[in-house]
Image 1 (tube, rainbow, N blue to C red):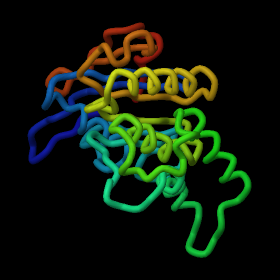
Image 2: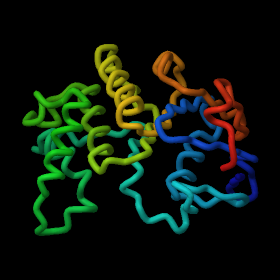
Image 3: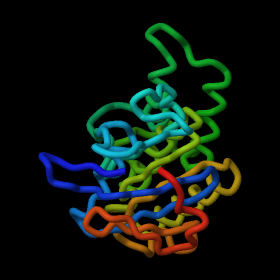
Length: 222
């Protein structure tokens, strides 16, 4: 798969397959094409050559977006809003809860579960603005998880997060992969944040993908 802006190639001949229950770490310098590749995976951009498929379906025809959880780079909750952690997580169900429709028992159970997994159960009634940066980040990841996605894409999730929060996040991601069989794509410039977690590591260099870890878990047709 290749993609370019105004005739200038940004991502060239990328071939990558991410399987369930794997943790793929993506590294690369600024401007290497990481964010573009994420946008292609989310269907926000269309490749100029080749295909991007989610669960076997081309992104142009893909409709089951609840299967994909995404936390963008430098995501932040508005600390001035009088909204609780529980309410932030609940907003992840907006696509399923139409106006006037109440959360089902299953929805409530899922909210409880992701709060527990992300270490936020004791903070659920706290206002989002009262939380540390790391706690806010975990709340945003919990919001991405509440729809029970099979794929979770995190773009620089530990930016501005302290060491204690990173440790909790690591444990949570390990649980998601090992126990819930979620596929995680973790974009970062710092290998220390995913050391010991990644099934494989891929690097983008000037738009070209290179597999640094075990190729059996990452290489394949796009």
